[in-house]
Structure formats: C-alpha cells, structure tokens
Length: 366
Image (tube, rainbow, N blue to C red; front, side, top):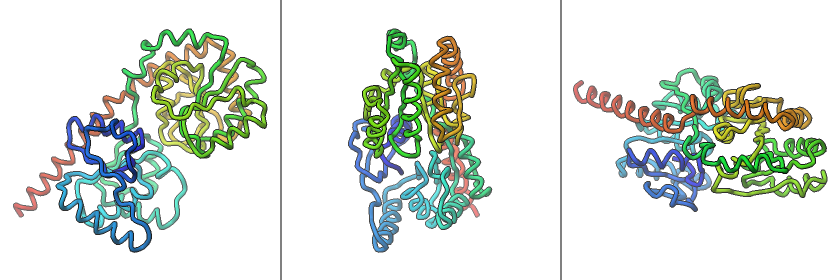
C-alpha cells in the first residue's frame, strides 16, 4: 500500500516481486508503471472523499482484502491514507500486517487524534520497520507496545552508484566549474531557501561555483525569485526530475542536504557511495547517514551562514574532499547495501508467514 509514483516504493517493489506476488494498492495512478511492470497496480485505490466516502472506503477495503486472497498487507509511509488503511486493517484484525516509517510520517509533530489512531494501530500491527534509529525511537514515543520493531534502511544500489563507472566524470570535477548539488524535492521541509542564501555567500568567495537543484516541487518559483534577488540566478540551475541520478550526481564536488526534518535521506548515502562529501543539517536521521568530520560535515539547520562556512571549508580543501569521499564509500558499503536491505524485508515477510501459519495451526488444534 502506497503511492506507486514514489521512487522509493518502486525500488522496493522491483526486487520483492521476484520472490513474492506483489499487488500495489496505490493512492494515485502510476505514470511510469513500466518501472514496476512485474507487479499488479490498482491506481486510485481508496480515493473516496467526505464522511460517506470514508464509509464506502471502509467497506470497499474489507471486501477487497477478503476476496483478493491477500496474504500480507504492507503500508509504506504511515500518514494520511496509510493511517486510514492501518485503522481498517487493525479493526478487521487482518494479519500479517506491516508498517514502514519513512520520515515525516512520525518525525513531525502531529495532532492528538492522529497520535491516538497511530497508537491504536501500532499496538495491533505485527511489525513496524523504520529507515533509521531516529524514527524507531519516535515510534516508541507513540507507544512502547510494538510487537516487532526493526530498522531497515533505504540503502544504495552499489552497482548503480559505483564510482568506477564514472571515472571520466572526475575530469568534470576538476574542471573550472565547482559544482554544488542538491537531489531532493523542492519543498519547504528541505531548507532550500537557506541553501540558496548560503550559496550566495559561497559564490562571493568561489566565483566559479554553481548550484544544481535536481528535483521537482512547489518551491521552484520562489527559489527562482530568491536567486534573482540575490543576483545569482545565472549560477543556480534547476534540473527538474532526472532519471540518470548517478551520472549527474557523480559530477558534483559537494552535495548539500539542508533539511529542517529528515528520516534517512537516500541522496546523502548515494553521494557518499560515489565518493562525494556531504554537508547536511544535524536533524532527524542525518547524523546516522553522515559521519560528521569523517564522510561530511553536519551543521545547525536554518542557518545559511554556518551552512556556507561548511561548504566553503570543503571547497577550499581538495585533499579533505578526497579523504571524506573515500571514507564515505567505505561507510555506505559496510552499512547501507541495498541488496542486504531487500533480504531483510524478505526475511521479515517469511518470518511473519511462518508465525501466522503456526498460529493458525494452533487455533485449529485447540
């Protein structure tokens, strides 16, 4: 259960569908459904509105699960529709049942009634997975009565993000243009206004530096205006959605993640896998993703001055960038191998199937 347009969900579906029959109950239509062609996609699932719509949604979900032969329900991202589906699943006592926490679904402050619903669901779900320890602790704050809580991160496909594939790109890194990259959605929560302001400071010292923002989002127009007002619009490039992330990312000298709140940002791990140091905010799961002083630099959020100082420090010292880049490659390889993360989810599913089968067998006996 999730949004099939989300790239993270697509990443999970592709390998899991090789071992399991996966049906994606999506909250939206999948524009690029060729990405997950091996799975069945049911777009616009449970998209009802209003009180009557919620009641229809309730009965539709119950009937669908009962008649479709689904063996396990896995909710990806526990917010909005995810909470409603969680309520239905918990109320109808449907098992096995898994919830995966991604970031803002538990990291941000929530209304009292939402916390109540999440507590109710958490105490009935068979397993909860979190992409980092920070989110795992946030889940415990809602209730300590979670049967099974595991940390399974969004790791990195080390084959796709192998720096050896892009050795020719190192020439680009040594070129006259110093490239600073950002690879996330253009939304308020990711601190982009602070990044643009910080870059204006950096550009005064490094006249040949340029900022590349890869991603789409609601802040694009505001950021364009901000860059124009700061006199740096010719040096700030909006790349939009890019398919060839490893290739583009490999040309950067530094990657910046100035988030105001975070789970476990994959962009930080991908950059390090390519040997690129990261400057990031000291919030959420970022201290787990970036080793401060070893693979990158962590700074206070909402402060363009300290952000600029950290970027300048790395741009001023090529040897430091290389040293941190190598440490980052080792760090990601040891802790965030995507293939191992997929195996962890497969093992979780298998374990839950076995536990459920045993419970059913005991119920029949007694």
